[in-house]
Image (cartoon, rainbow, N blue to C red):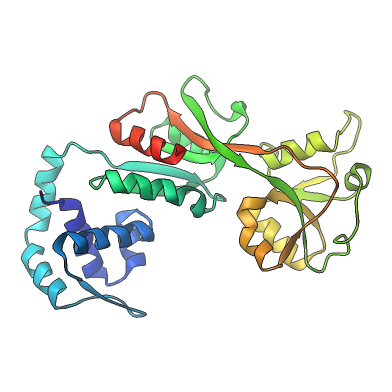
Length: 288
C-alpha cells in the first residue's frame, strides 16, 4: 500500500534541498522529516538523496522518483484528503522541556503508526492551556502546573514521571564551596521561574517563608536565568534535567544546600472532548 505522506514529504525535501526548510513547511520537527525520508528509502530499498553540508540533493534514484511523482502528488494528496482515515497530531511541548525526554516516546509511536505525523508546537504554559481548551493542539507534554491555570473539567493530566528542581551556580561562584542554611538563602536573592512554576512553589515551601517575611526571589524566564548564570554570580533554582549538558561540561554546578526540593511531576495534558485512536496511541507511547 502506497504511503502518500512519505511521498509528499519526499517532494518537499527535494524541492527545498534542506531539512530545516522542509520541516518548517511541514510543521514537523527536523528529526521527524529525516525519519520519514529514511522510511521511504527503506520501503523502496534505495537511497534517494546525497546528504552533505550543503543540504539534501537528489541522487539518480531520487531524480527518477521525483520525475514520476512530481506532477501527480498534488492530485493524489487531494484524493487522500477525501478517503484518509488517519489523523495527524498537534503536540504542544513546553518551551523549556528538552526533546530527549519525549523523543523516545515519539519514536516508539512512529514504529506502529506510519501514517500519522506529529506536529510539535513549542508553547509557554498559558498558551499551552489556551490551545488545549480551543483544541488548537491535541496533547501537551509538560510539567504539572497549578490547577488555577486551566479548566480542570475540560483538561486532565496524566503523570508520567518526575523532574528535579535544584540550586545552581556558575563555576566561578563564591557560593560554590559554602554550605548555606535556609536562613542564609532567604537573605540572598534567588532567581527562578514564574510564580506558577513548580520551581518557584517548591522554593517557597522549602525555605518555609512566613506570612510576614519578605520574599527575596526574582522571577525570570529560563533563557534569562541561563544568561544571568553566565554573566553574574547568582544562585538560581531550575530543573536539573533541563541543564544536564551545562552540568556535564562544568559550565554550571549544583549547589549543596543540605536539603532537596520536592520533585516536580511531568506528563501529558489532554482535552476530554478531543479523543481519537492515534492520540490514544501517542499517550500510551509517551507513558511507556
